[in-house]
Image (tube, rainbow, N blue to C red):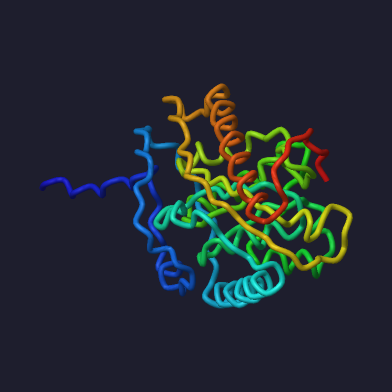
Amino acid sequence: MSEPARAEPPVTGGPVPETPSQAAMPVDLPIDVAVTFPARPSVPAPPPVPPVELPTRLELAWYQVARGICYGVAVAMWRYRVVGRENIPKSTAFVIAPSHRSYIDSPLAGCIVARHVRYMGKSGAFEKPLRGALFRSLGGFPVRRGAADREALRLTEGALAAGEPVVVFPEGGRRSGPVLGELLDGPAYVATRVNVPILPVGIGGTERAMPVGSKMARPGRVVLVVGKPLWPPALQSNGRVPRERLRQLTERLRVELQAVFDEARQLAGEGGGSGRPGKAN
């Protein structure tokens, strides 16, 4: 008797196709500009990462309603504008790595795409039950700052493996001033583990609209500038992430993020200038 045919193992690594639920979502933003991205480096398949459970139709509907409200408020109150939308990958997950000067940066960064986006936020924002439930319903999950939060990393990798973009602030917290603070290796680590690009996003105008310490937002102009995607380095043969290459990718991100942050600030009317990075908040 002949041996039954064996099923081919699933292929890991490479771009993650959009799920049916994501492909069915309405796209109300002009993202049909043709563009050629830098060639993706040839890398070995990373170790498999278990994907998180995708949102249900009801959760997706609620997210789209909330996103629509946020987008409408941003346009009406801050003349919200996105530059470089053609740099946003359309068929793969990616890490959104924005500058961080205000509480309103998270929802505004998520509005650059119509897809369901996950957010990594400081654990203190999830402590109150109602607020924590709201943030989680909108794709947020907590992270403990100042420590290696393995659960937050697992959720980030799982969301990326499931094809969802994730917002991770590389500065680690809100800062002030025109110069980026020291960047953490978190975005580079999760991007390398799952083999997805990092998207630098400079946000200008939010420090003036709602600075650190302010409880109310003010009208103004907010501009987001999206840089070109940065692909991670190859993994080692044992699946480990080389620390030196992580630092190199983080340095590339710092240079690109500072450039788009400078441009966003100028377009938002905050001007250029230089100074020392502020403390995280």
